[in-house]
Image: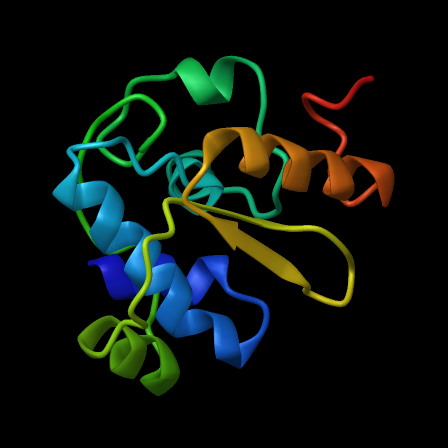
Length: 133
């Protein structure tokens, strides 16, 4: 199931193994995955920047509202995502955010740094929810 999340969350092939590692690291810490792709699956929408009551809605797919993996895979999985899930990159990352339309994704294990990375996404207007200085 985590490979379907990897498939939906990644824009650049090099990021598949890193996102797989983030998922594994969060699961190992019993930390909520908080992936927009899982919320979108339950809401039958696509895109990022999920906000409002969708984040609060308790479903078996909303990884903002529940700990662990969603109830089912959230989509079809390609070879790259499967390989990455079987062979995740080594790393301590717990957070990632795509910061621009090119698919540049920043990874960190520090929440304060993640917030700074997220602000970069706001500065480029890639994200709009939760942005403000």
